[in-house]
Length: 117
Image 1 (tube, one colour):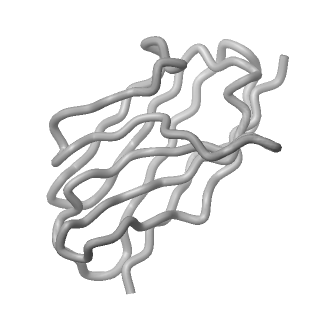
Image 2: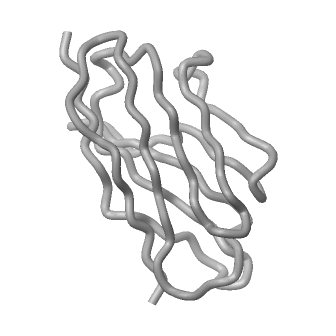
């Protein structure tokens, strides 16, 4: 069974940094895309960043150059480096992956990121 496992969330002050990591357990062909979503209380889940085949990345506008997504296409891992964090970045961050082979997305359980003012 394929599972995505996140780590690296926590509590940080405004302006601080966190690094989120996501690894894949279980045997699977390489994901065609991996990335991160987030969901704040009372809000819908939204895309943060995605990387395609470990090469091309896209970011939501609110990132504004503060976050960097990177991935190892062969190992099915993805990392989100978050700098200059703001209180509005507080949310549960979910690892996401898509595989054309499986024909569906995969989700991690989520990791809490809290930015104090």
